[in-house]
Every structure is written in structure tokens, then in C-alpha cells.
Image (cartoon, rainbow over the protein chains, first blue to last red):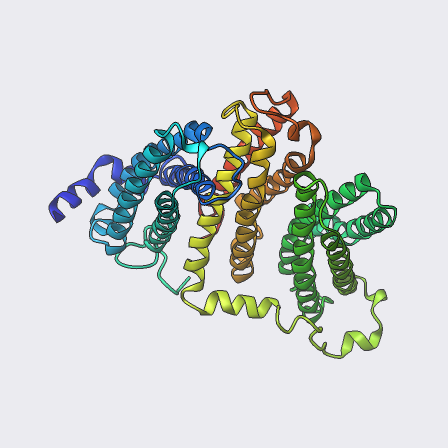
Length: 172
Length: 315
């Protein structure tokens, strides 16, 4: 395992991300990761709040395309995330917070696909009140994404990774 | 032009702007002129938006000025604390003014109590800002301060005991969890406001055309909530370690983009042409230009926020 992580970290791409002073290297990938976060969590939280009863005059069915923007964000963050991982594979790979974040994202994505099927494969969704279990899924989705964001931020502070410019916890 | 110069230009906006806004609003309330009420609410909101760079450049100016001979650091600190309280109440007033503007669309008119509260808040904000301005004037214009005032150490101003620069700074820096917690919340606020920005502006650009704009308009306060959370957490970073931001070009661009977004927000919140876009209808060309610029500016804010350590000196 460590062997593999070391090979990843020693690769040309990882080294370039780590050592290049260019704004198009690490800073650009990090920005893409943040925009991707905004796309996924932004679009899904708005749909979730609507499911929970906010702005209830908006019909749900036409939001399908809007909801799908989430996949654009997910693709963006899968790619940028792999790059960010490769840059510091040996430290991120053994970080507990990182694996907690990955589990939270896996759970979040599973909940999202459940929501997607329940809402957008149901032609009668706008003709009756939102069922309680769908509301529970929407609520869980918001909580899971908030937790995933928190875990992501904490990677810079807890554990072996101070992924962002080597910040030490508390010594800012 | 340096940032102290910019502060000298911007620092007149909160006091003069609110004086004009409050007078317009008072007359509009007395005469029950709804159109003028909306205009004055817009003025109060935009002045609150411009108070953000006025406050931020003030901190930059204090860094430039405090080592100069003949400048009282004590007076600068008192001015800074007075400005912080005034700024806090002014932002609260701006948020309430925006909410009332939104209610003018959503409910046809805001509740009477709402408008009276805004009048009260704006008068308090103006009073506090005038006090801060008066203290600030004394930093470089000794003629406005009596000799006695310049030599006696200053008592803390009433109201700055519970909110002052030093207490915010020590809260942010001396408690381990505050900075990471604020960062996590800042990212959640980012996601919430981006979601609403996308929903409204993509509709105007032609996505989800079957939805009436008036229905999506209801989600605007969610986006504002996200922005409010980020203003508070962002200010905690700024007050905590101001030297990371004051001269950071990335930060200056970010604030400029935010101010422009404030102008776009007024357009989206209040224009009849936008409100009237019904199910299946195409938005007018101006609305499309504003929508595209809003998405562009918003991505710019994220970009410059992320670039703080790389284009500038934040760490």
C-alpha cells in the first residue's frame, strides 16, 4: 500500500503539482475543486430545501436538468480530487480524516441517486405532497454534505496532512 | 493612490449615503409613496454594500498611518472600534432593507412593522457611523478635536465593550477550533449562495423555462442567508489576521466583484421586467446579460478567494 502511494507521489504529474510555481498547477486545481464543490452542493441543497417544503410553488419536475449539474460538479471534483490526492499520496492516503471524507461523499452520492429516482422518475411528483421518507432523504443529504465539507476543510488541520501550504494546527 | 487614499474616498459613502437614504425613506413613509420607499431601500442596501470596502480599506489605512509622526494610535484604535460597531449595525440594516425590497415583490408590500424597524435601525446606524466618522476625522485633522481630547487617554465607547476589534481578534486567534470551524461554515455558505445564484440565473438564461421567475424569486433569501454567513465568517478571518488581506491583490479583486454582485442583486430582486417572466417565457436581453455576469462574477469571487495565498500573501 505505502509502496503504491510512494509511486503515485513520485510520478511526474504529482511532482509538477507539488513543485511548479505556476498558478496553473496546484492553485488552479484547488480552485476547480472548490467550484466543483459549489456546483454539487449548491444545486443539491437547493433541490433538497425545495423537497423539505421551502419555496413550494416551484414544481419539482422541471428541476431535473438543474439537478443534473451536480454530475458536472462531481466529474470536476473526481478529476481535481485525484490530482490533489496524487500530489501528496503518502500523507493523504494514510489520513483518517481523508477516508472519513471519502465515506461521507460515497454515502452522499448514494442518497442523491435515491433522491433522483424518487423525484424525477415519478411523473406524479408534483401532484401530491412530498412523502415523509423523501423528506428524510433530503435532510440526510444536507447533513452529509455539510459533514463532507467539514471533513475536507479539517484535512488541512488534523492528521498527517497539512495539504494547504503546510499549515500547522493552532500556529497560524 | 494607495489604500489610505481609497479609504478617504469611500469613508464618506456610509454617512452621506445613509443620511440621504434615511431622509428619502422617512419622506416616503410619511407620504406612503411606495415607489420612493423601494428606491430608498435600494439606496440603504447599496450604501451597506459600499460600507464593506469602506471598513476594509480603513484597516489598511490604519496599517499605513499608525507609524507616522503626529498620528495618535490611541485615536486610530478608538475610531476602528467605533467603525466596527457602526459597520455591524449598518450591515444589519442593509440586510433588512434588502429583505423588505424582496417582500415588495413577494407580498406586494412588506409589513408596516418591518419598514418602521428599518427606519429605526438606519437612524441608529447613521448615528454610530457619524460618531465613527467624527473620531476618524480627528486622526489627520487635529483642528476638529479639542486639545483636552487629544491628551487624555480615551475611555472605550459605550457599545464597543461587547464588540471590539481586540475581542474578535483574540476569539479568532486564541481558540484553536474557531478558524477551521469558520472555514467549514464559509464553504457551506459558498455552496448555498452558489446554488441560488445558479437556479435564478440559469432560468434567465433559458434553463427550466417552464418555471415562472416569480416562483424562483422565493429562494433569494436562502442565497442571502449564505452570503450573510460568509460576510460574518469572512470578517472574522479579516479581523483575526488583517495583514493577510489588506494589501492582497486577490482580496481586492474579490471585494470589487462582491460589490458588483450587490448591484446585480438589486436588479434581480426588484425589476418588474424580470419578475414578470412567466412559465415558458424568454427573459429580456438585459436580464440575460445580468444573469451571465452574475455567474461570471460569482465564480470570480470563488477564484480570488481560493487564490488569496497564491496571488497574494495569505497563508
